[in-house]
Structure formats: C-alpha cells, structure tokens
Image (tube, rainbow, N blue to C red; front, side, top):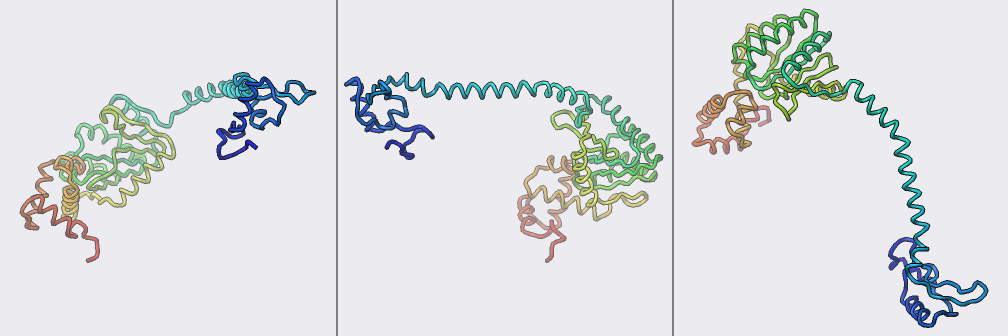
Length: 327
C-alpha cells in the first residue's frame, strides 16, 4: 500500500513510494507491464490500462498525468474566482449607495479649520444649547481676549437656565483676568472648580455635541466637532470623574487656600520624583518654571535636603507625598 499519512506531501495526495518508482522505471524500459501495479502509480495517473479488455498497463509521461489531475482543480478554482467576482459585482451597487449616504448624512466627527470657523460652530452650538454646558480648560491662565469673547455667550446661557460646569487648573487662582471672569460667571449661576492637572480641552453642549482639540494640528486654529453618542458619553464620564476630585472656586473667598497650595506643591514634587523637568512640570500644571523651582526650593528647605537629587531620594522613601495613607 502507498497511503502513508506521515509522508503524504498534501492531504488527499498519494505519495510516490520506492516500489512505485521501481515499477514505473521498469515499465518505461519494457514499454508495458502486466503485473500488479502499485496504487500510487494508478492514482497519480502514471500507469493506465492499454486496453480495457486486457490486463496490460503502459507508463504515462508525468506532464500528461499532472495535467489530467490538475485540470478539474483548475476548473473548480476558476469557478470559485467567478463566484467571488460575482459577489463583489452584486454588492458594488449597495456600496455606492452606502458611501453616498455616509457623505450626505451628518458625520459623527468633523475637522474644523480656522479660528473663525471654530468660533462660528461654537456660537451655533451655544444658541442651540438648552440644558447643560461642560467645559475644561487646561494650561493655567486664559487669554483675556478669549475670555472677553466667551463672557457674553456664557452669560446668555445662564440667563436661559443652562447649567454650566467649568474645570480649570489651580494656577488660574493667581491670574487676575481669569479670576474676574470666574467671579462674573459664578455670580450668574455657573460652577467653577480647579485641579492640579485636568483632562485636555473639551466643550460639551447638551451632551449632544463636543469640541475637542486635534493633536495633529495647532489647537488655536483647528478643532474636532464630535457628535457620536458613545464618544460624547465617554467624554462626559471623564469630565465627571475629574469634577468630583476638583476644588470649588467661591466668590468672595481666598482663591488660594493653604490646602491648594500644598496640593500644588505635592503635584510638583511627585512629577519631580518621576524625573520631569521644571519646564515639563510647569506645562502639565499650568504654572511657570520659576514657580516650579520655588515649590522645590521650599520643600528642600523644609525637609533639609542637601541637593535636588537628595530631595527626590528623601521624598521617594517617605510618605510625605501620600498624606492620606495610613501610618
């Protein structure tokens, strides 16, 4: 027998055994044979009966045998290829309709180019807003000119009863123009809180449209308008998580209580221990590099460290940056 699964080159293909090769060689030399033909030769088409009425076998050239064996397979492959092509042809019309509909329907994410285009989109969203506005502004202090443009829109929303929550970084508590803006909007009913670090810039109107920056471009002149419900749900959830950890800003009170000063200092020292530069720390916390150096200097004097590296070593081994831990 020639069927040995351990040496079969492909499934359903009988290998040519040594006995078959010897038999094929003898048949080529003698012209024909009448002995018992190995199975591998008959299944591979290398031996055929010379006459159906006689038990005489002749050797067949390998190229003819392979052609006879592969021709049905090639026809089957060609049929499958025609079937695949037919599927693509049948669906091509539906593909055209689908793409056209996608282009004509409202896109869930749109890229806005130009400060005037962004401002116009914000104005339209603000005019349509009826229930809630969520905003987060990282980077510490805000541009007074931008605050001047935003203030009338914010006050109009307050007059319509729109609930407003805004997140800033602690650094705004030392910036006069931003504080003046906060006092006006909180007096009208808006809520403002601050954190040492917050999420990226985001504006969400009625949980139906959100504006976020596109990191590929200049944030001052480009923005993404997001209307996909799942994406907006995610942005609101992240905002709410940050809001719960933030500290309220109350009109008429000291805007920089000692607690927040200590929190900012801890944030500075944590980032320093992690290896960030003064410039990198300042960028993340919305404060200047000079303020970062001041916090590090005060902490060094308080602990009595001999150098910045010694300070980082002492902080890393202590619990000073984790006051809420037991012990």
